[in-house]
Length: 107
Image 1 (cartoon, rainbow, N blue to C red):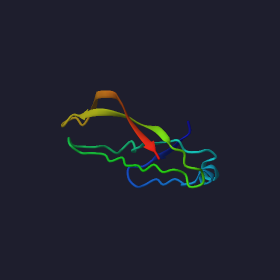
Image 2 (cartoon, rainbow, N blue to C red):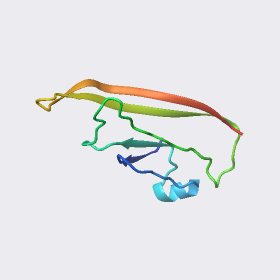
Image 3 (cartoon, rainbow, N blue to C red):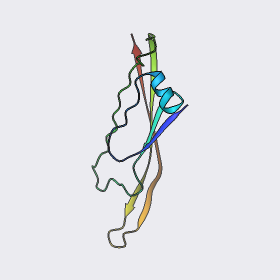
Image 4 (tube, one colour):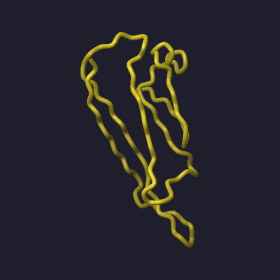
């Protein structure tokens, strides 16, 4: 599987909506996306949220084929606690792995 990797804490990543456009830009068809925030970016307070939003579309230069599909969203993150006086960090949860699977049907 080919992933496009972007490092950004804000903004939008847009891919070409044709297979040929992706082949020209990446040399392969993009089948997934990995994103990470910078090493100095954090969610500081309880209740802060991170929004990941996506839209999947059928490539404009390939025929549409009906049938069921599966879309997997994988999330990996770490949770740290910062001491209020010493400002040191300790690991609360080193590896949080979560996968959300969505089934849909193309008509």
